[in-house]
Amino acid sequence: MNTEISVKGINRVPGLLQKAYDKLAASDADAAQMALEEALGVDFDHPEVKYGLKCLNWWLEHTKRIDDFQDPYEKGVFIFSQWKAYYGFLDHFEEHYDACQYAIRRFVFSTALDFFKDTLGDGVNEHDPDLLLQVGRCYKGTGSYEDALKYLEQAARFKREDGEAIAELADVNALLGENRAAKALFREAFFLDPQKVDLRSMESELIIRLREKVRSMGYSGPELCEWIPVYGCLFGVFSVKRELKPVELGRLRQSIFFLENEIRSSPGTSAGAGFPKGSVSRGAPPDTGYLKPRLINRYFWLIDHFENTREAPGIIEETMLKIKIIDRSIYDQYIR
Image 1 (cartoon, rainbow, N blue to C red):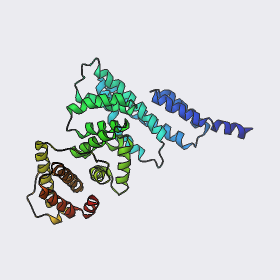
Image 2 (image 1 turned 180 degrees about the vertical axis):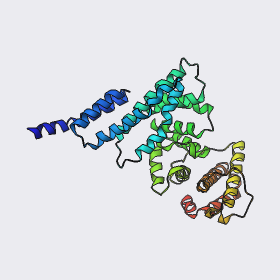
Image 3 (image 1 turned 135 degrees about the horizontal axis):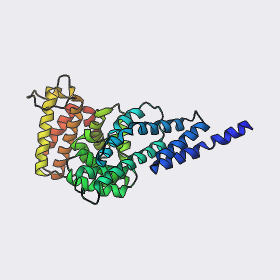
Image 4 (image 1 turned 120 degrees about the horizontal axis):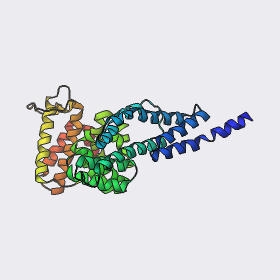
């Protein structure tokens, strides 16, 4: 009889887990916590129950200070500020449960959204690009992709050279099935500033698959962000391209010149071995591991531009040679 009762109890765990996740998605953290604790009482060793409780308790513990902030916008920003630490917390787990993380994200983004909507008010702050970006991110995080698109498009109009805003817009386009727009926007975001793209906040399969593929090659951390646009081009993910305006072409060539000088002057950087010595430029990125992929990505943009305009074939040949000098493997994959 005791065994029978025990089996019946254990069979309740999936239902209690689902109840907890549903309550989280509805922003009812207290009810979710009660359901998880009840499930833990039924099966103390259930790995997903323990995982869910630890994740929820982490957020409840780390957002206790929320009432220290008076302004709703500051409260929303405070919640967002915890994501990086939360990712570090998750890295300690060997196994992850997607259903739990989905529910946690809905809870966190719904909570932040309420604060940002209070700031938005009756449209008083509707032209604040940072607020529009935050509201758009929250709607994306709660699964309201059409609403997210509306706010992220507005934010991107104000923040045309902000890699974070463009990446969020790309991600929601991909989630809505607008893959052509998503590919073009992701390519743009990683060109503007790979370090501003929060890869762990991206939800679309388009970018997640690319991220995991590049990560499997041994890249991680900030360097991973720099190589994604390179392999995004090689794998045909960033396949939607555009012609550059004259001022953009000028800036691109100036950026290439800057990065080439940095590679020449960086001690121990093998990529610079084939370049003649040049002057040392100022403002170098602190990690020379960024230099090679960032420069190669700019070479790709330069080649694409001149292939589209059918101008200056000599520049294309010269740029291809530079890629070959910097990284023969990338060159071989590019010409296939």
